Length: 309
Image 1: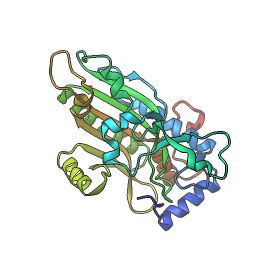
Image 2: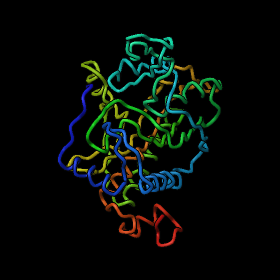
Image 3: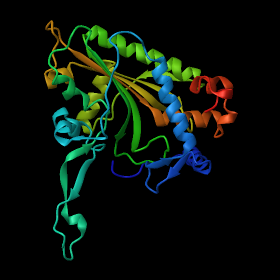
Image 4: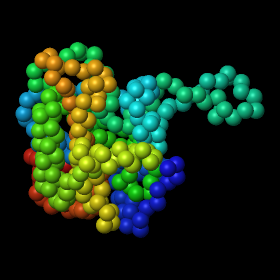
């Protein structure tokens, strides 16, 4: 779990080309990359496209934004360290005196109260809980382009440790939340199809830790609590670029989120992996934007001269 996942020959070649064209800027640490101007242009255009094509149904999306760190106690409360200890990252800081003698600075590192955010929706639940019971129609949040971190270093450029999720969260009655999630899943397939990426939607499961985690994953699949949309990026294996998760009443019960009429509250979240979608576009259409199909450029940069950024 702690080592670097190997990359296929196709993934190594893809990463080489990405760096040759300054799409990605290597840092020397697997899964941590700088981004060139052309990559940032595409990622922003994908983000904007999702905003334009999202469902217009009530309730209106409420915008929130959070930093890429959160209280460590909240991850403990959620149970993240029990289910995904191999992905978690707690922030440590120096707690020594100015003169540490012959000891290494590392000997004086201690855990702080902060952890890296592993899923963009997590900071939102205590905020909504603090408001009290939900009103009619519930709540729908747009958390925007949120940085998240997962400790899974890999030579595959599509498996970054620090990346953006375009995250949306729904709170409401079970049937409202279920319909909202399905609507977003359908729209994701439509969006990616217009970009020429040939997406496929599948029932999926999270990478739970250990033997008990495998049982949880099977249960999650059996109940269809998680869908993913996958596209081809490098090689034959498809990679998930968006996920659609139903939590049922887990977070509502954990944080005491209730409705005004006393009905149970369910939650769901939708996450688009903006870096992965952008990488799929480069792999599919090439490394020079001017060479991309005109209809794809028109979708990403509507109104721009020639359909380019």
